[in-house]
Image (cartoon, rainbow, N blue to C red; front, top):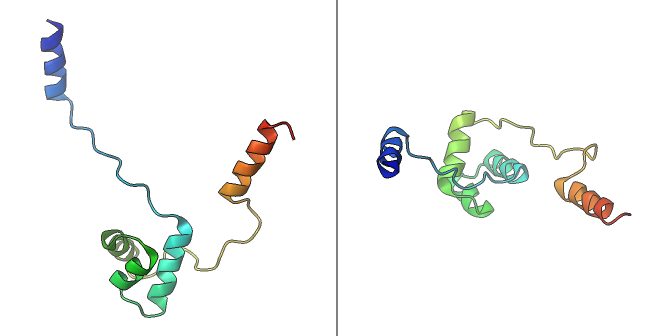
Length: 95
């Protein structure tokens, strides 16, 4: 009886999608748009940064060919992830 119910549940439930690979870091996307601004083709920019061509084409297509973010590096106002991680480790150690 339990097995039948499990099979019935599986038949009604949609398949779970894989979340896929995590998106590349923001600084990689910034570097991609800088290369595009220098006149590089999407495929060449992707290859230079180690990003897959479909990801680079998606960035370009979704942004309409214009960078969706500022190409300037972020200011030092906010801590980077590694700095926050280091602070958390030091705090956990009692420093």
